[in-house]
Structure formats: structure tokens, C-alpha cells
Image 1 (cartoon, rainbow, N blue to C red):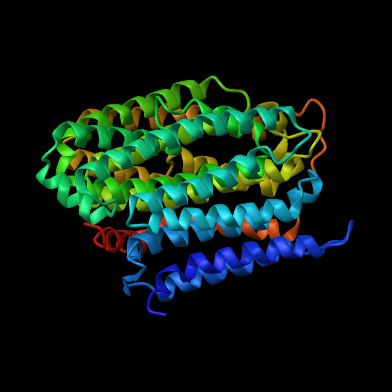
Image 2 (cartoon, rainbow, N blue to C red):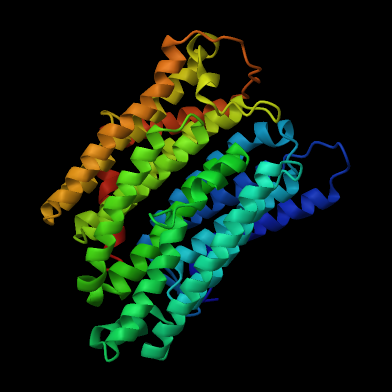
Length: 475
């Protein structure tokens, strides 16, 4: 029983996924069943378990550690999961997505994300990565009649398989050096570095595996196609959840285990961070499809988060955790609105589709504006505090050029966020598109996301303190 506490949040999510599968098995054709409710119960339970485990530093089987770092990201993942479930209830039936499969796969993906962040063994991280990846591959192509979805899922799967192979080779080289895949043993072996060449190969290959998952340049090519081809609600989920889990594992492995070699990998990561911010911003300006635009926006935000890892002070590490929460709330809110306004025939994902939204749906237009301004970094939203915290950490650590690139790319990115705002408020709609009614629970979820965006922007101190406390668990 002493081995169980650390895996309780993960176990709760897995059980809720199994319950969703059973509910679908017993559901009669045409019968309405609140399967999303089972997911909500599991995610709220996992969030509560994470809260009660705070400061306990529980460990399970020597390879899973529920320290404050993992628990902080667990709570972010639970927030992402709850908002996904609330928005999905409207979308799944409307777009004829198989509900049981969708909810079960989403929950299994979240369980993989939680395990990936909490794992203290490279092989367990790899297994968790595969659990979440396989679920997300299937979710990307879950609309079987959609050719775009099938193409996106195939591209994502093919490139994901290559990145997994790189990651596995990195584990093999690390095992060669340390004789173990445990992170503490690998860290000790890297500190003495008897095999410098093998150590560099291990670091490089592990970095490639993580860089693919976080959509860092030049491993970002799958992102726009996968985001565009997947159902919009799946795009919202994977653009936030996968990024949070991947960055969590990235921080644990690189800023804790591989810290003795930071003199070698930090300069390379700095170049990747700069290129990621520039490419994500410049190419995003050229997009007219909102999902592709937010895909490149996601790439740019990955660059900001990498900047926090490069600025490896305590503030920089904590900034990564805080920014993950800020980005997750704003991005899932924005893409959630796109999903809620779309139908199977009319996805509502082109810029022109937002023309005149202020007159037709003033509440949704106002919420969309808040989320876009947060992604752009406008005060008093959370995005402003998140970016300021990361750029300030970079300046304190002497990365002035990267901080300047981050500020300039952030300013340029405002252009493509404001294009949607201008379309909503200042453009007449040529032909009124079919915009379905948004249910009360979905509106409540959007309202909570908006409140969180303002709360984190106006009163961020307590959450930042939790982020700093969380980072101390792995330093």
C-alpha cells in the first residue's frame, strides 16, 4: 500500500477512462448517455488527490514520484481535461464523433501525460510518452469519413514514430553510460562524464524526442497539418495537454538530471528557442485558417517556454510552469470557441467566418477577445504576466538577444491575434454562417477560463509562489 499514493491521481483517471469504455459498451444505439460526466468526475478526483498529496513527496515502485513539480502540472492537466470535457459535450454529438472512444482516449492520454511528468525513469517516461501519443494519434483521425483528418493522423503518427526512435536511442546511450535508466543514476554518471561523446549523443537524441512533442523548430512540421486536420476540440486538447506534459518531462530531465552538461546543451537550446519564436511568429502572420494560425502561435509559445528553460535560474524554471498554466487556459478557451461555433459541414475556422460575430454572439466575441489578448500578452491578462516573467528571467541570466527576439516576436504576433478581433467587431458578415447554440455548461467553462485569465493577470503572486515551490522539488 505504501507504493500506491504517488499513482493515485493517475489511477483515478485510468479508472474513469475504463468507466467511459464500459458505458459506451452498454449504451444502446441512439441512447444519450452522459459519458463526459464520468470524465469530469475522474478529473476532479485526480485534481483533488493531487491537492492532498501536496508536500508529501510520495513515491511509487521507485519510478514514479508525486513531488510538488509533478502535482503542479497534474493540476494544469486536470484543468485542461475538465474544460475539454465541458466543451466536448456540445461538439461530439454535433460532429458525429464516437463519444465512448473519444472520451476514453482523451482520459487515457491524460493519464499518460501525468505519468510522463511524474516518472523518474527514462523507460517509464518513454512508455508514458507512447501511451499519450497513441491516444492522440487516434483522436486526430477519429472522424473516419474525413480525408483531412486521416492525412493529419498519418503524418503525425509517421513523424511521431521517428521521434520516438530518437528518444529510445537516447535512452540506450544513457543506459550505456550509467548502467541504469533511473534519472538519479543517469545524473550521477553524467556528472562524472567518463564517456563524453556518448553523453553528448544521449543528450542530443533525448532533446530531439522532446523537441518534436513541444513543436520546436525544426521539429515542428507536423503541427499545422495535425492541428488543421483534427477535430477542433482535439486540436484544443493536444495543443495544451501534450505541450504541458512534454515540457514537464523536459524540465525534469534537462534541468535536473542533465544539469551537469548544461554548458553543452544550453547554447544549442538557445538557438532553437530563438528560431522557434521567429518561425512561429513570421509564418503565423501569413495564415488565414484560424487553426493553422493558432498552430504557429503554439510553436511561438514553445519558443517562449524554451527561453525559460535556457534561463535556468530558479525564476526561469518557475516561469515555465506558470506560463504553461497561462497558455493552457487562454489557448483552450480560444480553440474551444472555434469548436463550439463549428459544425461538421462548416468548421468555422477561417478568418472570414468570424466577421460580424460581435453582432450575432456578443458574449462569445467578448470571450474570444480576452483569450486572444492574453495569447498576445496584453495587460491585465495572464499572458502579459507570463511573458514578462519569462523575459525578465532571461534578462537576469544575461540572454539579452533572446529576450529581444521574444519581445519583438510577441509584438508581431499581436497582428494575427488582432486580425480576428477586427474581423469580429469591424467587418460586416457577407453571409450569415450557421452558428449552433452553445450550451450553458460550455458557456460556464468559457467564463471560468476568462476569470482565470484575469485572475492570473491581476493577482498572480500566489500561483507564482506555488510554481517556485514546485520547481524546488527537482532542483
